[in-house]
Image (cartoon, helix red, strand yellow):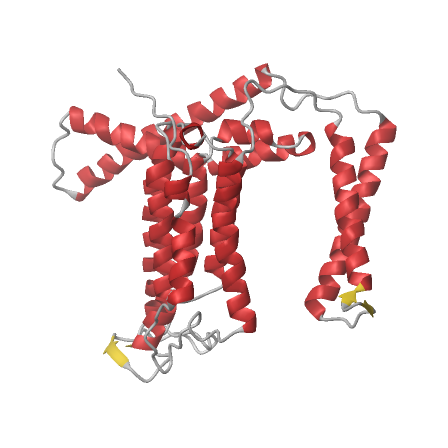
Length: 375
């Protein structure tokens, strides 16, 4: 039974997206750089060990570059627009004077350790979220993800999948152009004009290739009937629109009451009005999706079943998210938010190390992907 469970196969795309989104939620709750870097390392381990040989699986490197760029930009932003928020001055840059009507903004000047660390913490948190999205995009098959979406969300899912697949396509096109230039043994550049011409010879083929792929994708989707008018009756359209409005209204009022902390009528320590609004909003949304989904008739060849491995993968993401949320709200949260001023060394205790271990388990307890070897 264990050998059958570990047979190489492709996991359901919802499992990888659920795992990655849960890890992103867990990382967005803290500013501890050790924990954030630990999550990035765990995500890299799971992605490298469980990604397949498909083209979208090779896009993870681009997200790592983007994450490093985000951290550098956040620190550079702090240095550029006044980085003296703290007593520990590292160095002083020549300050650029600004007009008197620009108050509260300062260019360059003294740069403090506290300001640089604050920029690094913010950048690391945003970079960790970007890496999580990159891991989900590299692990999950976008075609299977599109086929597994509910019928009412099919068009929205198409737009989202095309959007998140744009960066991997650009990265693949860039690698292809760079490989072609290397094979042609492009001459070395010496002057500024030659360097600009090199950039032009790279950007134009990459954008042209991305445009051709987009047009090919649009043509193939049009051939298969996407976006065509269905057979939904006016009564069904009016009913689904009414339910959608009820859902949006109920959820909006619930969010207003939840965020504003409005007093509520409690029964057995349960807020009655907020619970009713939430139930009505979610129920109306589900009913509207079911009615709208009747119009979309489609079949799926060899659908991926949800099994034990998918449940374990999602659990390995949800458990760290719930643990860190509870730690941030109901226990001593100083370790999740280390102080910058005065500076406090970030640390990891045993529960946070266990969280990282649980987050790394999908690299070992899920089946390996099917690797297609090219001749």
